[in-house]
Amino acid sequence: MSPQVNYSKSVVDVARDLLGCVVRHGETAGRIVETEAYHHSEPACHAYVGLTRRTRVLFGPPGRAYVYRSYGIHSLLNAVCEPEGVGAAVLIRALEPLEGLELMRARRGRTAVRDLCSGPGKLTEALGIGLELDDTPLGGAVEILPRDLVEAPIAVAGPRIGITKAIDLDWRFCVAGSRWLSRPVR
DNA sequence: CATGGGATTGACT
DNA sequence: GTCAATCCCATGC
Image (tube, rainbow, N blue to C red; front, top):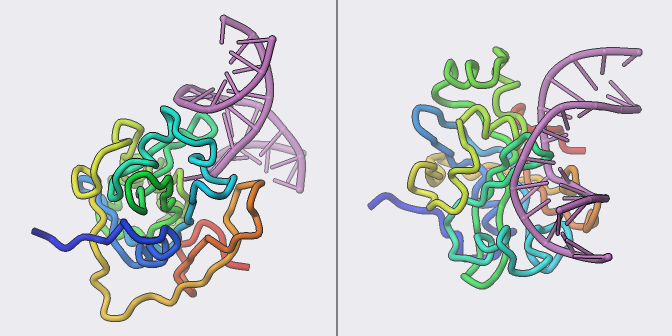
């Protein structure tokens, strides 16, 4: 049995832990360089409204994928965290492309490596992750492999991107100095 | 059943 | 810098 990330702890801790881990789907894979934490106690989180059809996954057991459609166009990938009954997830916002770059280019319609996975909607397109993978286990079709690095990356925290509520929380985490981020850290 | 709002991106001025 | 694309879902009548 391969080692797994522990998703049952605090969502902010998991957001930090996931930096440096590798996301794989089929022949494509990339290393996580940017994450954001969302928790049902704050209004930016989808689970803030409580248990609905949409948020059922978020309140379910940890270690599963929450994939939803954003702006009618993009699929965004999250890892459900904290014990069952707590609505929380980590949004995967950017990857350093590692494997299957040609397939990523074909899916994205772009050639520059920096344009392949430098955003939450970009990386799902590059890896071929769609809504059909919502509420499926991480470790199934979509895998998140624990960090294989000698040293943990240095995490830098800042405000989350693209939200209008709870902008005071510094729950965006980036690998310091990474050139693969969706946006630079301020 | 109608409405409104996005955890975004790419094209364009 | 501005702006449209496009659809799922929660909410309210």
